Image (cartoon, rainbow, N blue to C red; front, side):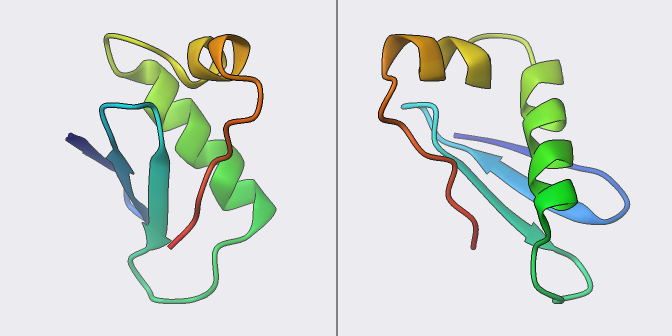
Length: 64
């Protein structure tokens, strides 16, 4: 499990490719926030979100 943060989001990357994200200001996560979380996850070395979705097409990005 790895953690990635920027000024607004906290993103948790699980070993199976799942992504959990939340806003630091505790407001609801918007679709733009989810896209930013995917970009943060893809910027990390290793398996990317696109790789996981290609290998397991039924995968979902969860929000917390």
